[in-house]
Length: 288
Image 1: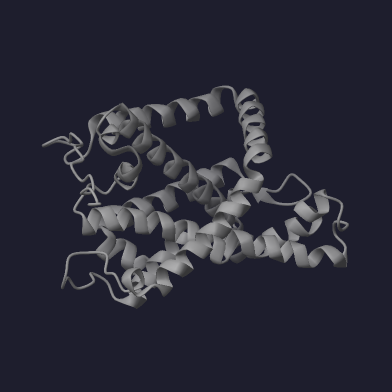
Image 2: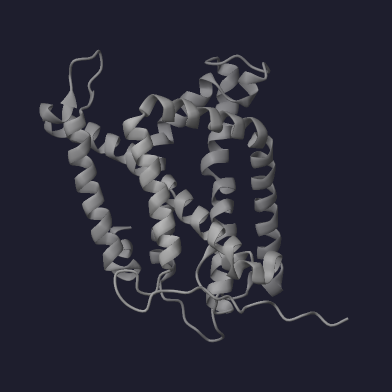
């Protein structure tokens, strides 16, 4: 039985010129519209947004908690198998004879900076301390929170978030995008990785939905990272310089003030924009 040729005829209409040159205008505008709506909702109706989003988050955790733990474990097993098999482990993500654009050191630096960065700096201490008091084993009643017996489970679930399992998620996603973009010369989008499942359906409305969800999820993930980063940046700046105008000193514990958070956000966003506009080969590489 002959194996059918893989579907590679992915068509995404992009702008020929202007601000959105080489990008899909519908995907960009819809993604921006969703993000603006979410931001306005949180600003104008913060209590409603907090309760609604918190409820959705609780439902998602209730339904998908076990699925998440199981699937990331399967990701690790899958990647180990892919790496061990000679036919896949030695495969180059690109055309035959093509040399890597970056050295291993530069590539590792960028992956480490983008994959962990602020998250590791903020939660290296905070996460195990938080999980010491409450983690799945504590909730299940197997051990008591904040006791010596719960230390091991606290670090176990911290490792789940920052160890091989977390990297397995990045690698599976990265391999999917790299294989179709650089080996099969398809657009560098999430929908390209789903063409083996959905084929030509990725050329239509379903493909747009996939890409919009990918953009929105990425922006939300980055915004959380930047949010923690700004707060940490202001705390650290205050500890080093003692500048009181960036902190709210009225409570029991000093916390970043609104003025400080806005100032920190402007600085970090400015550096991020400069880095991104400079391109991966310059800004992102040198900063990492």
